[in-house]
Image (cartoon, rainbow, N blue to C red; front, side, top):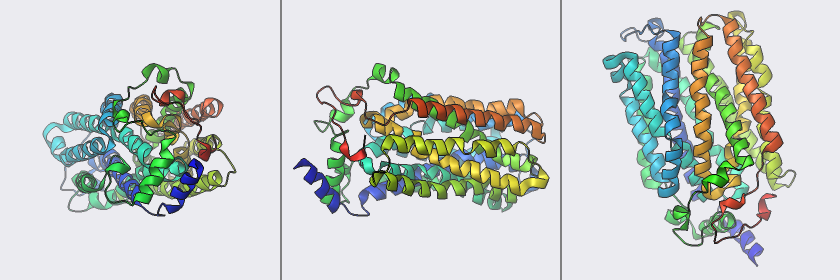
Length: 471
């Protein structure tokens, strides 16, 4: 009878419904958040080279070390609020915490040009740090929302789609940055674009977003039943308020080997991802000799490949799981391996490129960054596999550790690359990133899991096996 109810509710669920609308909004929210993170990486090239932007705007003579401080500033704040932000999302729901993190940091993006004029790089550093503090709850909020909205069999496709907003925001920012910097807006327009986009998204999210299906009025009863029935065996509480009052099992989480594998894998991924994210524009200009407009387009191309390949990997993962060809745990490890180990060779080869091989260097970057998106179907949604009730908390803890790497990566580049035109120094940077990817995935293959942990459940409930996801 219970199985029949599951099947019936699934058949009645609309092909496109409220859960898809929520995912689209989350996708756009993560995109807006990433336009704020990436804007400085592309704008700083124009800020330090008057010939590559509108000449009416000031040029700043910052050293490579100062530049590395500025590019890492966001992560100093981002690291601090990961765990507190996850607790806020767990207690109050993901809607309000996601709204505040993106909109408030977007308002600071609007103030960025003024801060540089008033306080040079020191005030800019402080502002970027504050943006990081505000965005510390972003991904914990997204994980909290996904655990309430997305059934297990749709987690690979819809969950990964939401996080592909990271690549979309990056592509969007890099595509428009060259044009904006050369227009009458100059480099300040890059920050205005990110800020305005975030505020507009926040207005829409406030009225349409919802913490849970029960809070969403614009959905059919059939879809609501489908979602709640599908999630009931993993995360649904006994009472309406049990979920928000459930205490976090800190000791059990900290003694969980599968969680530690996510944490370590996510940390190594962060090193490689943010090394490329923050340094590609500088690498393009210094080693490949590209100006701001061609630099922006070439820098965006790898992330466009990231976005497109994400959809390909989502379809492939969903197809393999739903047809029963592979289990969830095999899918997580397979795609994580593709995302981590395939980019290693292109990254190493990048250290041997020069201005005469700019086309080949671009192809290598497209492969490295594009295929890296497969990792989103591995470790990135594995938190929800282990503990749907504490998915946001797990993400906050893992992301806190990962952002130590995000912070250290640009600082390490600044320490190694003292001469931005020295390809030998860049070669060391790419070797380190490749090593991180190799070790991270090896640990995930050996010790990673995708089954729900016993500590996911309140003491009043016993864990039940979810037969639908093949675990």
